[in-house]
Length: 87
Image 1 (cartoon, one colour):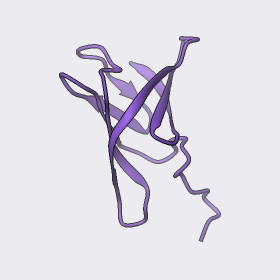
Image 2 (cartoon, rainbow, N blue to C red; image 1 turned 60 degrees about the vertical axis):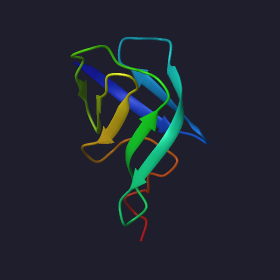
Image 3 (cartoon, one colour; image 1 turned 30 degrees about the horizontal axis):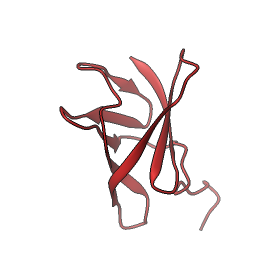
Image 4 (tube, rainbow, N blue to C red; image 1 turned 90 degrees about the horizontal axis):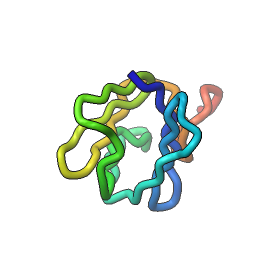
């Protein structure tokens, strides 16, 4: 399992895996948001994971032709993440 950090930028996503120095950058094809505006699902332009790879932390990933990254918990890093003190 890989611990993952997902940073959502303007039209792209940067993914950092624990134990790897080089980040992965992919273009965003689409986003889903919850009623509060938090990103819950990201469609990417290519595969950013290996078959059978499992991610730990706030995000999971699946897809055969391109990756779909989904939020499964709290604490992911991204421009749309609100601080715990935000109203």
